[in-house]
Image (cartoon, rainbow, N blue to C red; front, top):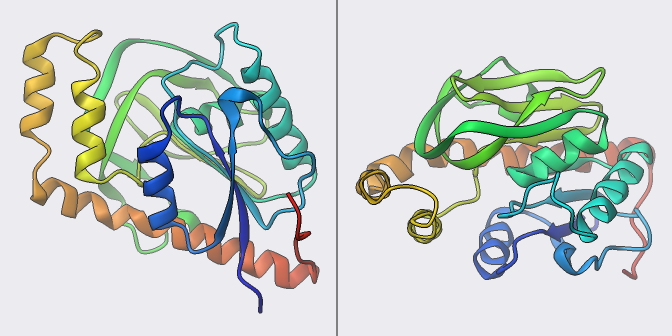
Amino acid sequence: MSRLRFALLNAAHDGANTRRNFRREMDADLAEFDATDARLPDHTDFDGIVVTGSRSSVYWNEPWIPALVDYVSRAADDGVPILGVCYGHQVLAEALGGRVAGMDGFEIGYNTVRHRGDELFADVDESFTVFTTHGDAVVDLPPGATLLAENEYGVHAFRHGHCWGVQFHPEYDRRTAREVTEGKRDRLDDARVDDVLAGITPEAYDAACEVKSIFDNFAAYARDLRAERGTAPVADD
């Protein structure tokens, strides 16, 4: 069977870390598109679509954002498996009819999340460690969506048909976690940033690696769905 082909919709404004992390974790050929320049595919003929994190908010008045939401909505309607991560999770929620809003606080660092069971979380302990960084959250799930994971900060994963959103960052390595945390000094006080940096240890990272299995689980789902449908993606972007 030919290798899976995913569209990587990179919503990071400086996408080097994002590109490196997802290319390391995804067992698929990735066709990358810079979502912040509204450079999106003109079709949805992929085995799967991955939407990345971003420093933007889905409710900002920037022209590339509704274009991304509309594309994700169309891909979901076409039955393409979609995995949204952090900002991508919020884009997916909006695309499917949910609602995202700013939080009273900010969640950042290695934190504990609890899941309720789903094939995306196969072999992941019910309570697991992840790196989180977000000031927005999904406050209303899309109609028909199932809540899969949460913590005291709110929704951390949901499923709708062939689509999954996760608020946390399973793709992060320690370098990315440190750089992203340092970049929050304009938003958070130095004491909190320093505390989060102190928690970015090899032990915390090793614990968070457990949930990286969701990438393989998503790929396995996309592979099985392709076999069931007897289809393969087109060759050109």
